[in-house]
Length: 380
Image 1 (cartoon, rainbow, N blue to C red):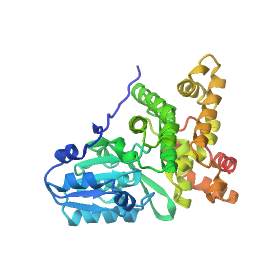
Image 2: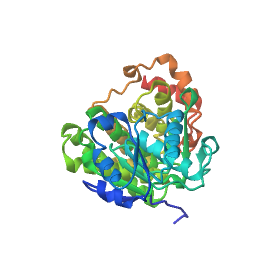
Image 3: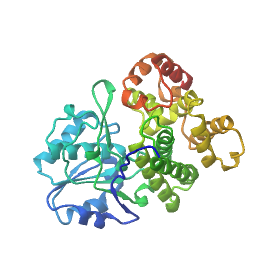
Image 4: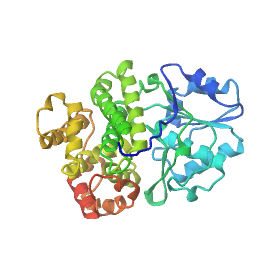
């Protein structure tokens, strides 16, 4: 066995009605709850606000938007600083969780945001942190990564172990009210996490592989069920666990080309992150086909067990077809033109994608700027 390192992620509270249990884990003193206005409106934060606020002052920051901006992050941090909070909790999708992770770090370490962009640069101490996902997709509750949209729509990230939360809560009841298109996009996002972790060119290891395989099994088996039966708690639980396992996998074996080409679509067009991954999934996997053939062939047997007797090339191609069909059957429109992206934008998108060096280096094969332009054109 070649040497590897593996970070097991946060401690878990899994199951329904975990609000009181989580509140008991938090330290005394004021707590900043980071969420968004829609979740407040839907009532999804009520149990956690009530339980946490019963024993301490609770300050709610609900101004988080999709693809949160640097300004939003700094505003949340300032609210926490003014209230002298001693802990943070995020309830929401990837955006509130990303804001909470970095705000907890900035408040605890006292460091400046612009000094910590990148991988393993942030090495200070953060405030105690708990993350409660309301979507089965981003896996952000499991990861040491926070992605923030900066000037010009460029997405920058902090990726460092101090951002790993103390606690994560997997409560499937919080996902029951998700609209179908959100369920679909976040589910495909999680599937991409599993596939890219399993085929990552760097840091792939036996534990990340095992997590990615089980994540792909749970997610591919249950995605259409939760879309067609949105109140199916068992299937929702499987999706939430699958997304978490995929998050653990890509925390250790980082994602690659699909994400690198998805980010400019989110940054420039404000499309949901899961949707942008779905838009580029087939095309990037096809670009990688020969380089990742054996690994894609192994994953194909998870989504299509009957293909085990076929050759590796056929199985690898089958994986791409099955994942593309899953995205399509989930109800997502899978052409860039369906989402207001012009064909003529391909050169600019490709130029922006080249800035995602931390992701491109993990791809099974090189993606040049001309490759990226060709892939955007193919996706149009």
